[in-house]
Amino acid sequence: MTRLRVGVLISGRGSNLQALIEAAADPGYPAEIATVISNRGDALGLARAAAADIPHQTIADPDRTGFAVAADQVLRGARVELVALAGFMRILDTGFVEAWSGRMINIHPSLLPAFPGLHPQRQALAAGVKFSGCTVHFVRVAVDTGPIVAQAVVPVEDSDDEDRLARRILAAEHRLYPLAVRLFAEGRLRIDGNRVAIAGGVAPEIVALNPAEALTEHLASGGG
Ligand code: GRF
Image (tube, rainbow, N blue to C red; front, side, top):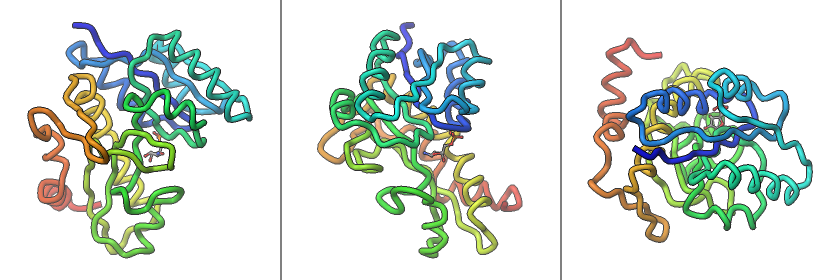
């Protein structure tokens, strides 16, 4: 099996990167992490890449175009077919976004289009929503927009603060991102305007991450 070559862009902790590394550790998984790029030398995710023997580097160029040119070169050199942003906290150069259009995805910790941008968990609590979650979407120039590939829902509890909600959403992210990458790697995603059609229907694993099941699972585990 030829596995899809994924380049992951990070800025920090890299727990979503870790979820992808762990998924790809299964030889039956249709994607592998070919390279990891961080815009910060102190990103914890770089150590995760190192521990998994994945080529990794820091591109700290403060100039947006300079970063884009260097990142593009690394990604092409690594024969990357899909770019996955995983906690990448810089706005990307327009030309870079356009060059990778349809081949670059992001994960965001809210149910987009609700709560784009910074502190989405804080925004969710302020808005008083009863459910939030995470979204994997194709990247377009405007931040946190783009055709949605998959979402996972988690309940918001009365006692939640930002950290607690963020932790619950993060656990869903770690399940959702590898599933979304799998769908891409299997060639099952077709972008049609703002919508993404999934050949063969929505993966049952993604359905299983969503409202009724998520809530049942959450309650069965005693909440939290
Ligand atoms: C995640 O919540 C992700 O959705 C957001 O930034 C956070 C990154 O966390 N874009 P990590 O670096 O993957 O642990």
